[in-house]
Figure 1: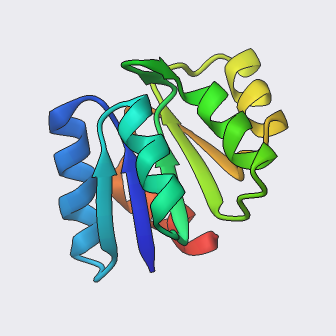
Figure 2 (figure 1 turned 60 degrees about the horizontal axis):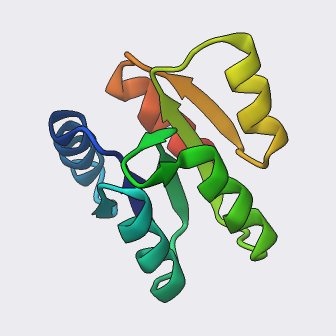
Length: 115
């Protein structure tokens, strides 16, 4: 499974990547809105882990664009924004799941496997 981790915080991004690689996933990263758009335009992914707060643009806007472009890849929002409204908005825009930070890596693994 090939996963794109779109996360601007370096420590969190590195922890997620290391954890997923222990499960033999192929993991690529994007640290901002523009690098994420670039990678999504060139490569195919089986799963996308998407942070909402990104430099250069909003993760929810990126999600909306992905869905308008017909992207069928599973998307899990991983965000510190954990209000009910944030979760409902993300799911209504097409996310398959919403995982609020902080979280345990075991839970992330289970959610990725469920896609």
